[in-house]
Amino acid sequence: MGDNSNVLLFEYSEEYPTMLSNFGMGNRLINYYRRKDTEDNARPKLEIGETAVLLTQDKSPFSVFGDVEKGEIMPTLHNGMFRAPVFKQDAKHTDFLVIRSTTGTEGTQWFMRNIGNLYVVGQEFPSVEVPGTHSRKVTEAAKRRLKAISYRIYSKNLDSRTKGAPLTNERIRQHLPGTDIAQNRGKMREFMAYNKDAQSWEPKRGEVVPDAATIRGWIKPEDICLLDSMQVGHRHLQDAGYNKDEKEVDGDEDEERDGQSIEQQLAPWQTTKNFLNACQGKAMLQLHGEGDPSGRGEAFSFIKTSMKGGFKAIGESVEDKLDAKKLKELGGHSYNVARQQKAYEDAIKRVWEAQKSSLSATVELSDAEMDDDDEPETTYSHDRTPRSGFGTPAASGRRDDDTMSQFSRFSASEGKGKILKIVRVSRDKYGTEVRDEEIVRDARVMREYVKRRRQQEFSQISLENMEFTGDKEKDAILEKLAREELARLERNKERRHAREKAKGIHSSITGGTPSAAGSPSTTAGGTGKTAGTQRKCANCGQVGHIKTNKKLCPMLNGTMKQDDGFGDSAFGSISATPAP
Image 1 (cartoon, rainbow, N blue to C red):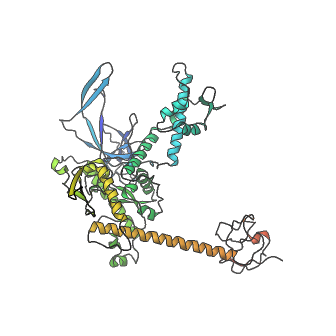
Image 2: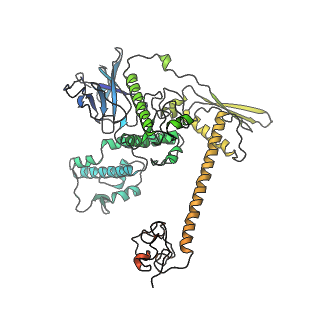
Image 3: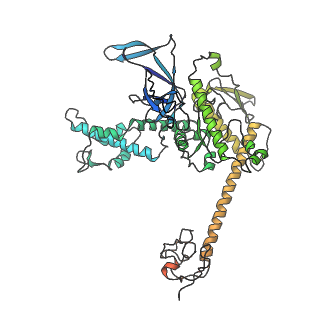
């Protein structure tokens, strides 16, 4: 930060970026320039950043979610985790960068620098996937970190200049808070041996202690940043009331994904995976809606949607897709692939252009335009018969505030201008009604209170005698409960039919006359366990084994002639004819 050095200040447009670099890590500022035509040999050079020239046919550095137009220069912040477009802004002449430096000898010193280079960073486009909680990437990174720490301590102890304490279990535990000695001991045995006499760990016999560069390569700085991002997302889910570890959702399981809340779908391991799959054409994103970090159509929503008619443009609803006139136009289908792809690409272009226009604008907004609208307070009354019902909860869901990101809606800033007034009504020892009011301003306390209060009210609802009250919010919740109960009953019905079908197949195989040894009806190995597979054999057509199973297939073990019943064996099972 010397007087002769260049200083770049980057402000992220996302309130909570998915990934952030740590101190000491490098970022590159690349100025992408796309040639106007084949004869264009220009290579424009900006004051800051390196120039990368794109040919007219080259793919966009932002994949399908943004493009560099011909003759345009797009500065981009690039590192090993993400790339994001950046937009230069002019700092005010009244703004300065103030630096505080504190040392043990000179105390505190203050320095003031001019702000010469100011950029605003657009939405991050992930280049790697954030690992999910308890995933293999997390466990492997933990093992590599333990290995690196162990070898560093051991190497430092060997050096006479930096000789320190030996590599003991207690010293390892100090570097890994939250772990115990027994847990670390099991992992240490994979690459080191324990010396009982010295009560310390040593490399196994024949193992060579790697050099510092090799040890440093086991754990990359990006790995730590990705783990930090995972922990932030996991903590956010816990603060939102999701205490159980959330498993990753398979992209093909639309029903399972639909059952997740918006907070679960916005977990960093979900959004990064969705984005990377969408860049490869394996998935489709919603692009707009609750997952939009800008809340105003100036950034992309990385929430996944179905590729089979799941994408809906702004203003389009499911009813529009099922409209009789539109169905006729689409030839009776609920959607048209080409038309959906065209709408998808148009929406991407619209969001990209909106982000560029907003972040490159130099118009200063007034404080009045940035203030949030006042919101009514929420009152919950406690009595012998609760009267609060389903009023608008203070922190029961997400705020419809365009200035809030998807994370800030559940953060502590949600409580700004919003309170929860709890009214408790009871009777004293004289039978007089006493009202006690309590004001809660902490967003997390409000959210947890409303959640438990609703759980208490829902537990008293009987689905058999459920009646709609006319309250839109309460009726919507009751309708959701009814749908969930119906879905549960349908799943139970399908599982019951599957079990009955499986029992029917089994009885059809085993219920007849006992066949010769080696047939599908015989128990495997004489242990009483029937064959577990329900696949059909391509040789004999029977169910219970495959064509390469010599023990069970009568065609292979000689219990059936090759020419018996071959007429319709390709489409159905045939009866086994024992060989004479």
